[in-house]
Image (cartoon, rainbow, N blue to C red; front, side, top):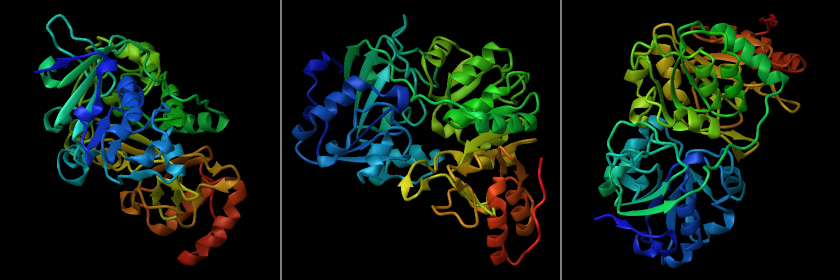
Length: 428
């Protein structure tokens, strides 16, 4: 029996037990009325509990809350960095495609699920709104489901019917969804985007990571035609591309006519675009990141970022300078899917430098997020290095050629440890 109560009457100790793991949607899908109340009542739970938070755009979770809350996430992005820098964020280094299984059973099982949902339609069906992805299966496996029904949340189409009986508790609210942090593309990002755009053919199906650089890459595709979208997340650029006529989804091979995604990571622009739009279909992570689905897409182009790439093609997308900034995430799932897709392209984008430090390095400083055996196409503002099928010696030449010019001589000297002394050639 679902209980409908006012938010002021919600007493979390009635629902959350010591030792539980609580989870909620990330970015704009955070049910902020619930999460803020949970943090305010954290001491009343009676013991420590865990919170799996995804990527966070609010200041709900602060390092001081770690006095009784064990914060966990798959990433150190956005406002998670404050928790990571304070040493109170525990990272789950797992591929996105494994989340459904991890959260249903074992030590990462989610006990209490907090949701932000759009109000019911005329038939009594609610919507998971801005985030479906790994939340969908938790409706069945979590012990407790608490829903914040926000009348400003977009109503989006998902794979299952959601009724009031799926919730143990419901509260009604009205507030704008959290927005993304401010970001602005510069000349370097625009050069990278132009190089990626030159690789993408009309009719390709796109997956794109999050942040200023991937959004800039998508914006550079405005003059393309018959593009498709199949991505873990979609942002404002997808709305703009569709409105410009670049995205039609008609040549995807599957899900024709529909943009497919797991979650929204953007502003009110994409929220309004997705609201009641049956041509934008949201799916769980078990679908968006499934290798069998990805290999069925025509010309699947996976575009993801990295922190650094070494001269053999190993990719670190997680740490820099000892700080956890990124994620394992879905990059490996999408890279492998693109490699198996007919005409697919696995693309990694990154500026050649972070400040004065080269991001093409002899040996990566952090973990190997993507091994060199899953070689990708690496793109910087200085060029494109297609590492697929290349032996190590040719990878070294290709990667040095797309490094910042001021770093190439030092990389050449470092490359001597690989037993080669050939000089780099410019790659346009």
